Length: 218
Ligand code: PRP
Image (cartoon, rainbow, N blue to C red; front, side):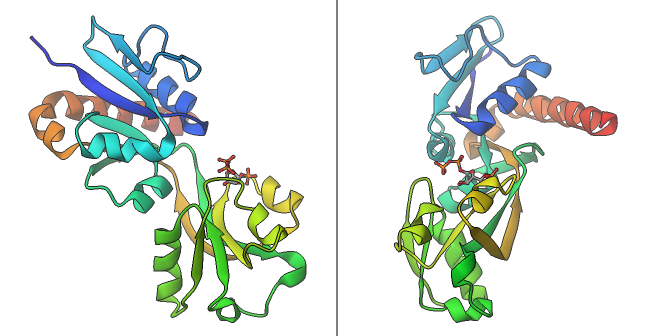
């Protein structure tokens, strides 16, 4: 009898994009919704199980094999530094990571911010970026509404995600350094990738085909 394939989906912006894409390749379950209070949603006929978790926890479930595969933003994946396979760039959830500061407190050059405080959800990625520039910084870890940091004097700058630019504009912040582009990724547990290889490989091939078709039609 075929085993279940357990898929971890993150709550938030990536949920519906992930669920819609997976549905196109036949991976869905009745009642699969971000609003569901049920945290495990199964499709017994097709042996698929979905778990819905906080975004930052997806790589943990996958690393430990509690989920075989998962969908997660590259930002969270890099920051988590978990030992998982990155199978596929899903293309959606596109945004970029950058450093920003209040417009009226802008300094002349990036290195003028050395040894100042930066608020971020991504201290590891930020540290790697600043270290390459030869800059030491003080990192203040926040879990959301990062833009508030410099407005209330918690930090001089932020390292955060920009999608449309609206949040920066509405808070009089200006991007001063680009760090990296980001998209959603499909990841797999290393053991599951071997023990459920054929199933995962077929899923990846089907997803690639759908993504290519979508790309060609846009
Ligand atoms: C993200 C990010 C920015 C915002 C950027 O926050 O941290 O605040 O989106 O998007 P924009 O460029 O389109 O304005 P999110 O909405 O995920 O919430 P959070 O602040 O609680 O992390």
